Length: 132
Image (cartoon, rainbow, N blue to C red; front, side, top):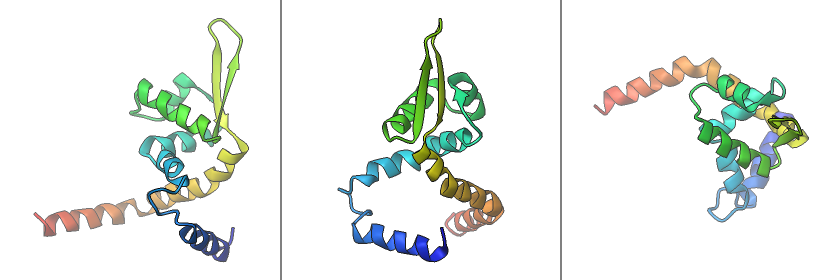
């Protein structure tokens, strides 16, 4: 997607009041851009994961929060939950086509944050020092 395409998309979203409280996309935006939603989607970019492997990959997430996050992402159509009829059942999570499409800009965001972490932390320290 070119810069002009991104700008056009952003303008279209603003035109349709995406920033408005009643916009239906707001709940999905909240789920995807939550701390855990973003990290789970980023972890699934590497490929399918079982629940325990995903929990180990996303450091610091509790079982309850991972379960809730996965349910939200499955409901949003971004993650697929594949259950194999074994004893016990084997459940694997992977990105859907829609989730893979979202992963591209999401990974750009994560990469951008990684590239600018020092600057962001310095800005926070400067703000904190100025407001102490």
